[in-house]
Amino acid sequence: MNSMNAGIDLQGSFIQSLVDLGLPADVAKALWMPLPMLLMIMVATVGVLIAVWLERKISAAAQQRIGPEYAGPLGVLQPVVDGIKLIFKEDIIPAKADGLLFTLGPVLVVIPVFLSYLVVPFGQSLLITNIGVGVFLWIALSSIQPIGLLMAGYASNNKYSLLGGLRAAAQSISYEIPLALAVLAVVMMSNSLSTVDIVEQQTGYGILGWNIWRQPAGFLIFWIAALAECERLPFDLPEAEEELVAGYQTEYSGMKFGLFYVGSYVNLILSALMVAILYLGGWESPVPLDQLALALGVSPSDPLVQIAIGTIGVTMTLFKTYVLVFIAILLRWTLPRVRIDQLLDLGWKFLLPVSLVNLLITAALKLTFPFAFGG
Amino acid sequence: MLNFLKQVGDYAKESLQAAKYIGQGLSVTFDHMRRRPVTVQYPYEKLIPSERYRGRIHFEFDKCIACEVCVRVCPINLPVVDWEFNKDLKKKELKHYSIDFGVCIFCGNCVEYCPTNCLSMTEEYELATYDRHDLNYDSVALGRLPYKVTDDPMVTPLREFAYLPKGEIDPHGVDPKRGRAGQRPEEIVAGSQGNS
Image (cartoon, rainbow over all chains, first blue to last red; front, side, top):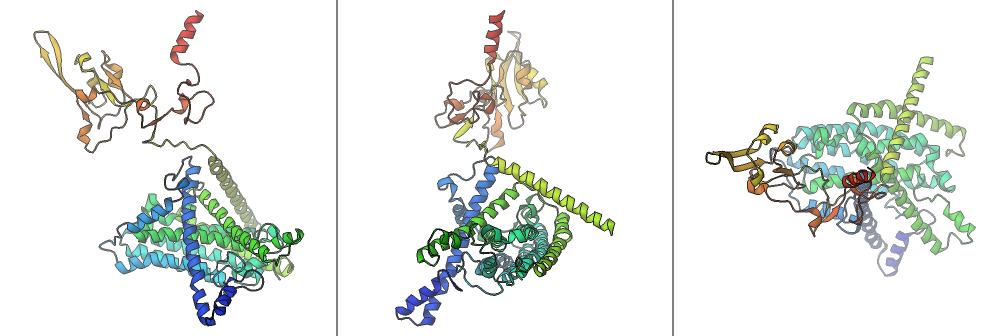
């Protein structure tokens, strides 16, 4: 994990300790590399389990039900049980379907989502790579998804699947643009595409420094577009069960369906993480911790304080993420599904012009008040 | 130009209104989250059916006079009354009686009109079978009494909302000796007799 300046340098100390043991530096680095990747896949998977459990529990509460209760305390093991069931379920490829594309579809949907975790920082130096084009990589990867969805829909040889796949592709493509424009406004303010730089630009003033105050319209546009990208409920037409059975998922069962399922929740968490990073200050606490430490009379460079600040940072990122996931779940039980024409109307006639205006206003403000809008 | 600005203004107003309505909707769903779940965990907990519950119909063979009123008031003439005229007694003799609960709509007309009260409603509702022909109950099956929910040691009986004591909203753990809110019919009758 890359460390720029301050903070805990896990990578450096790990490699250093292996070199001290007598290993060549290259081997030490090669030994280090799989660790953060495995960790990130684990984090994403556990995150999915938590999100599924939250979804079921919160849905139940919003409908005055109890929800999963018997599998583990409060039903926390229910998503695990679901997953095990999906793994052992027979994996059917319909006789008239195109086997290769049918298998490739869910894979193409899931891999880009997991790959996007490359650039998600959970703390100042807690990310796999701090590449300069972080957010851009995420946007680029997320546009691979509609290909997978279309592939799955087309290969199923089923009219519901095909319609669902087409809808999914149309929806993803039309919401990509306002999403990218909203991100562009943030990028303009922080002069960088790197996720770490974007968060660092929001640091120093606690909650007041977060981008949400400078980009309220951008925040809403991004959140709406992100929900549409995840096919969450107000925009879940590709899977609208009343019209399309299950959309592109209709013919899928077993682990192939499981991949779609996991992909959708990983994507939801990823979007929530991105909102937290771009607009809610990422790992920043509402109160600037460095200054709090100074005010309490402890040095921020003290190792123990560093560990505490790092832990609080990860907790803050996850807390913001799950608050956003909670809002997404609550929205699911609040809003009715939009029609396909309303969906495209909202995307092209409302979000696109508003995000363009938002971008222009941000540019103007950046020129006028360079101190507040990242000159 | 002015027209364009007006359009933009109207559009903005509509968007704000939509946002307001979404906020109101969210507050409703958020409020629902702190409410008590209404779940009855069925095989382990069961609601006590109300006294007017229209469940499976009970039939007393010996009371029946084979008048066939039940057949005539039934919307689909469902009860099958098999009788023979006994010339010695100059009376109709019932040989067989059956109702097919796969077809019955539990409207209760037969129970309402039976002149000898040989038909009555029970509180039985668990009629699932593997074969729909099993739902065609003959006079023996119709004569069986259902098992009461309150007598079943495997089941926690729960009172329906209207049958809870005053002030209670959760049926769990309510003392079965505490009566329902308000007066029972016999109490009303006793009260009015005391007054006169």
